[in-house]
Image (cartoon, rainbow over all chains, first blue to last red; front, side, top):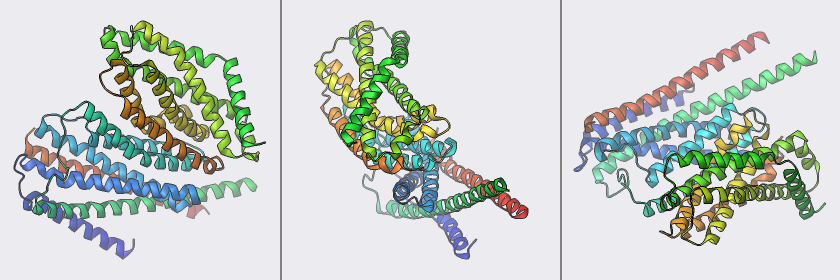
Length: 229
Length: 224
Length: 43
């Protein structure tokens, strides 16, 4: 592995350690929720990284449809998977946070439901990539990536409206409802750390994808040569 | 052949074939009957309660009808290698796509028209709001399902687990439209709120995704 | 579930998911490298 990559990984680990320390010990304790509010420093950055990953997938999917560039497809595969990983973290940490604070594990409010739908869309993307056989798979996946991303604002709007019609507990946690500057400071450190972790994961997954694609091409080539003998 | 006549020819051919083989219609009617009966075990279908719940039930039934129709039409095309013939023809791919969507749309709407009376009869359904709104919602909602469904059905046609893939991909993406369909139907049936926003959302959804489908269809048909 | 317990649980879950994913990636890397080496040996 290149020395730059190794340096970046080491830097990220240090950054993550630093930001976690800040989140747990330096950031001021929130008045109403208490210590549990510190989950915010992991929960929201994860959501941010997931969103960025899905946006990258959107762009890579378009690039693939337009140019049929294999690298674009590899990036699409990588970003979708990493996005799902972080989205899973959001969906797990959210309820863990909600339970002691609001007494419920889940509520169908706009943000949570949109996150769940987002998760469903990109999990379906991953399932198609894994289990669909045939040359159409990459195109099909790219299409899902495009449709899925275009859908997200519509999903959010529709559930927002649903919630004005049928009000229910809103989990205010995470909305930038006036963050204390000291908290904002810690938040940005964690945002940076998580973004770097995301970049590393995407880089690794991208490399894995290109290696596997090359391997597959080699196999196909061999089969071709073997057949012609 | 001009795109208009190609589209019309395809549409008429599809409709004729569906009319001749009544398998789908029969099985979907039976499925609806089952849904109606089984769900009646879960609640007491008095008129007031029905109005609250039927919105969701009826769209579950319509959703499955749509998936059955979608899987079927493309499967037939694949069997007869019709897709390849379309690819070599000089006619634009979008004409083919529009014809397919219209064919599926008409087919599913007919299914819905046949299934709706079952719900009315068994759940003593009487709408508080105007029925013409329900018809518009049904048309808009069906289009939303069918336009995306036809697109994905065309793509997943050669993938291994085709029948599972289609609903797997279609449902998550259709969630906002489904929410709009169910809530607007309930709004009209109960008369307790206005379906306006939902109907506008359906129109927006239909316009956006029809446009996206038309933009992408040409590129993806020529994939192989 | 107390607040502090939830905090620890949430942080732990985050690390666990990331580590599991990392392990999954490394396993796949190992497999690909092995197959590439096999291919090189046989050709």
